[in-house]
Amino acid sequence: MHGTLPGARGSVRVLYRPAAGGAERATPWAEVDPTRDHTRQFSLGALSPGTAYVVRVESRAPDGKPGAAVTGGFRTAPAASTPTPVRFAVITCGDYPRRDDPANGHRIYDTLHRMQVDFLVHTGDVEYYDKPDPWATSAALARVKWNRLFALPFPRTFYNHTAAYFTNDDHDLLKNDCWPGQTYGSLTWEEGVAIFAEQTPTSPLPYRTFRHGRDLQVWVIEGRRYRSPNSAPDGPAKTILGPAQKAWLLRTIAESDATFKVLVTPTPIVGPDRDSKNDNHANTGFRHEGDELRTFLGRQKNLVVTCGDRHWQYFSVDPATGTREFGCGPMSDVHAGGYKPQPGDEAVQKFFRLLGGFLIVSAERVDGAPRLMLRHHAVDGTVVHEVAMNSSGGIQMAPRR
Image 1 (spheres, rainbow, N blue to C red):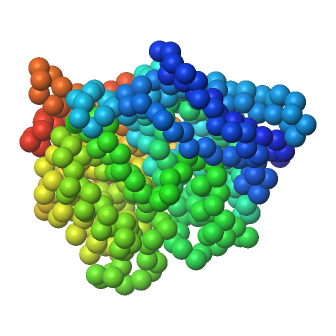
Image 2: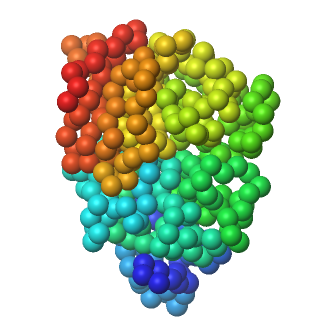
């Protein structure tokens, strides 16, 4: 099958050092795991804040013969006490057949590489198991989709030099609008969770928060593993986040002293969304928890929500609570579609664009005053919409482009 990349036995290690000079550290050699697509993940320690690192990943055969090596790098987050400028990207919805450069992959990776963002958050639907060429109805076919996508030059170059956080959604875990316990062909829920963990950088819990300097804290949440069935009646017990994740989210947001807070969610909280959908907090099927979240988030005047999943770009403000949400849009123009603005949308949706692209979030200081900039970009990097927010939550929208 085109794109199949069989793994091989062997060992790997990671060597890393500060780009400006310093002692090199190395992990021990570790065998790749044939039950996990011949992958191996490492946790790197003794890292300094706000520092660029050079990385080299080496491999060797079982007999010790040297194999391929890959070089790259990343930059660590600045200390929480340091007011350092930071710029990161939010993307969603890939899919190999819908790449816009057949030989090289999705063009936004090349755009983002040239922009030299500090890090990236991928909100999920990296791949689509339930779309053709092939339909990934088994673990083996799911891995084919991951392998061929990340073998392309644009994503390889980008991820070799940029730190990234991943959260899954439905299509890259199992199938459309899925929840725990379901299957897709012979692919089980448990296999879907395990494959996502082997193919992307993982943490002990699939939801996490991290600080980038004095002015920015980011939360990346998970929307599939703890949810109630979509078909369950709405009410206080119906959830997308699950009790533990929701309690953690509300507590850590309330405790944060960051100048700006950015919540990254796989699916919308504000919307609007299609009337036919019943899978996210903007839909009536999860209204109870959605109202709870919007009420809480709207009280955080220095917080914005960014989300993936939807195949269009938008900026919305919930009229009831003031919660602000930015949809980043799909990774290519050919992937855009699925929504037509409805009468009354203008009360919620302040910007709408039915094309691909990405969102850039920047925390910066202008004449000593903190400012958060949120810019929607086209695939080629052109800015198509921007919003500036001050530390009190006041916003200024640039004219539509």
